[in-house]
Image 1 (cartoon, rainbow, N blue to C red):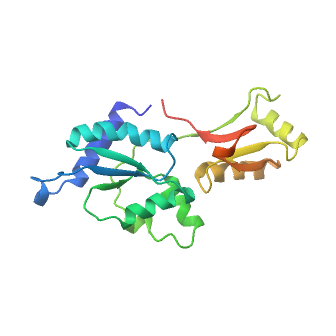
Image 2 (tube, rainbow, N blue to C red):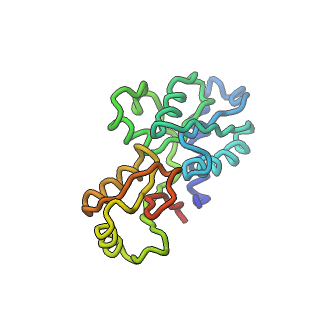
Image 3 (cartoon, rainbow, N blue to C red):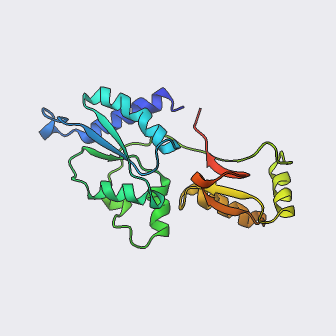
Length: 199
């Protein structure tokens, strides 16, 4: 879970960044939109909702979380980049939308360095490798040996063009294993590259 100290630092940074002396008396005077460029229920969405509630209480306005998933987070990021720059539309970005996507896509319609003003870092997410408990492997070495003995029979999943997708692809390449990539929502089998919330 996000630590209380980190959460309050994030809220304070957002409040300071959004306020300006000229509009201090009337700002904020309408709800905020917090765009999450990933589907509901995932780690980025969950963290955004952790931040949205206390932020709304602190600013005295509703903070509406709106999911705009697709294309590795670029659809939501593009929507925020094109929004009115009035301080009411926020992006709950990630390394996928702000670093990976520019390296993968030639025509993003936004420049992460020019289209957004960084406000705060909300969390650091480690990546982890998990497998089904019924597979005969308890270590990475055992899993690699099992995958080599069963080429093409295991699946792994991650959202397209995101850090877990790239990390799992790098892992299978370096390990020399033949496992089948599937989008995370379609995954029903053995191998998952995913996220873990900080504790």
